[in-house]
Length: 83
Image 1 (cartoon, rainbow, N blue to C red):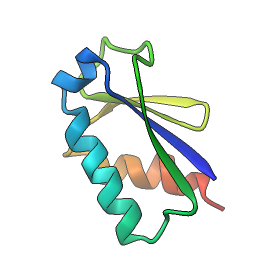
Image 2: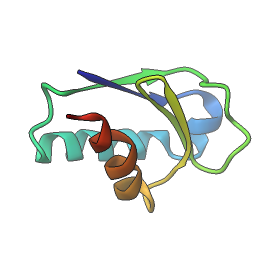
Image 3: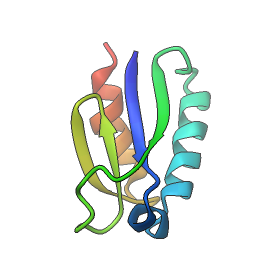
Image 4: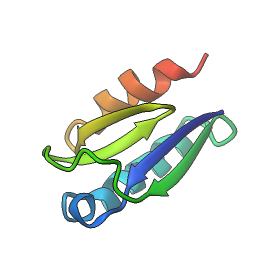
C-alpha cells in the first residue's frame, strides 16, 4: 500500500491543503484505489518555503501541490508508485 500524507500545518492549510485532500479523496474513489493508497494528514513536512501544499508519497516529499497541478502530481508521484 502506498502512503500519501498531506500537510495540514498552518502554512499549507492557508495554501489549500483542505482542497488538495478533497481532490485526493475524489481521485482515489474514482479510480477504486482505496485498497492501494492510504491517505493521511500530517503536520509540517519541513518544506514550507514554496507555493502550494506539501505532500509526502512514500518517503518522497513533494512541494507545490495545488488544485491546478493536482492531476499531474497525482499521475507522476502517486500512480507511478502503484505497480
